[in-house]
Image (cartoon, rainbow, N blue to C red; front, side, top):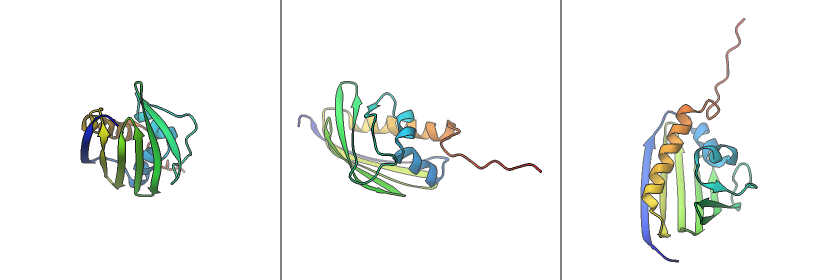
Length: 138
């Protein structure tokens, strides 16, 4: 693999429940909406489960993902090709943390920062990201 070893760990606060964050990170129908301009395989297991694989493209660069761990509060992806390393996600009510390590020519911390900002925007501005039950008027 060409490139150099990089690592980055970022944690942000956001106005979203643990369930909404989990859905945004583990449901391909949702993460396709906020990961733009990345392109993803059309047939990704929904929700993501340990053992699943998929490929994402950032421009012409393909990054293969292997889902190592998928729980209600975490996700660990093993990465290969464009980045050789891993991406871990942890979350709870009102926060999300992303840890990314690997060898790549891509600017990992810049991409990670943009990804977290897009996730925050999606969760803050998407009505379907955290659907609230509507009260019935008598």
